[in-house]
Length: 98
Length: 130
Length: 119
Figure 1 (cartoon, chains in turn yellow, brown, orange):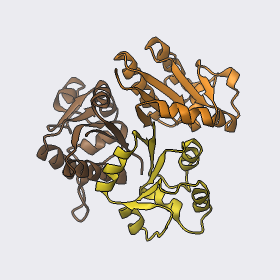
Figure 2: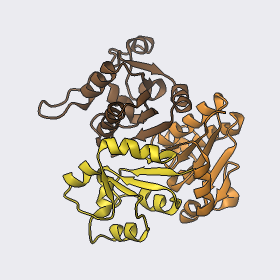
Figure 3: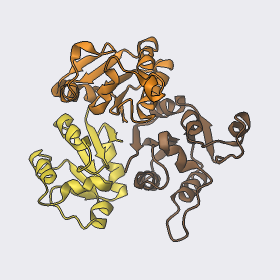
């Protein structure tokens, strides 16, 4: 079964993102929200790791969080809350890294 | 579809607001919120004693009106609540505490309610942290 | 057929009530005869270290409470090999009968459960 992983913590301060990328299955997706969207800051080593993780079509961000932080990235598809809800139904389950 | 939504953060955390906006969007899209369950520091999101500065958005008040408006089943974990001082009148009396800070529309109950919600929901979504 | 839940416990036993509250979810599920599994990941594997003395920090012994898992019918217990290695913990000296899994096995484990709660 496929899993949508959700991370909201800053990637600069802890190991959630690294553990998640390690355990992400081929049909899993990843949604970044809150300070986790800092993983898409261009030029950062974290962004390079995300880029190398080969997440085309399965990397998502909450639009309000990237807009609020003036982060621009072509790596992820930006979603509003209605699309967030629908995304959770495209995967079999959701794993929030609290 | 039926959603069970579990909240693990206090009202001042971004993730409590995110949970609320998600729940609102689910209902707006015609889905059902089978239960809201507040656990760990999420019990503070249900406290009736939060006083938000006037120039800030009052997420605790929005939670309350959202639950009331849609007549949702909203459960605060009793063990997590006691540990953190979130008590209804019965518990305040039972433990000899001077004040209660939890009242309707919230129910105080056990972790079995989280499992029951997970059993009947199509998706269990947890919100917590930042 | 009841839905299964995997609780992924990734906090140290010394970091406040989080590890205990993750365990409580598993025990409650077991008490209701639900299919519950528990995976120790990241700092969560520190809960499995032997010879811990929580009394020195005026804490209850979480390790003793973890022993209740099999009694509550929760015997699907797993630990992440990478997390253990990162923290210098040996697979052979853990306080619970966990199955130690590499990343590939963990991906398939996570895929098998209906619900996931990661604390």
